[in-house]
Image 1: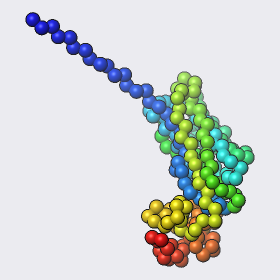
Image 2: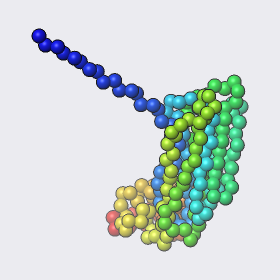
Image 3: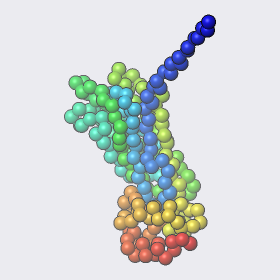
Image 4: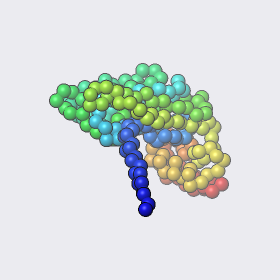
Length: 214
């Protein structure tokens, strides 16, 4: 006679984890240039009543504009503070008003445009501080904050966007992102402005093609 004992291992489902992220997480910009980032909120299926995000950064970066989006509802459904741009940070807070039930959210919460100081050099962090309020009005625990980084290239070789000493397919992708832009546009990058006339056009593309692969 044999006795068998079967044991089943029960795995508890993982709790959803909300996140707030800078996108793109990393980019390369010329000193004196400009760039933009999106602040993306993903509640991972959790109901959200309110959200506040503050992005802080070094004095060599200047926030020139910030746009807040309707991620938590329209202006008629929410109360909003900002976006506000004091020195060294940008903040935006939104709360759904009474009568508008908390909702799940996933998407762009805010876009920030920056100018870079001509004397800037190295890597700079874009640091997130975020609070998500749950359906009960209390902070949702464990929100993941994915900071961003911008790498500043100084006196870089034209066309070498990532500063690695060659001009390859990765630089081509950066050039494509900047193509058609001009000084002051978020995607303008002086590394792609070969003739330094303030825009990146077909003439700059011809110069880029000449140095591609070198």
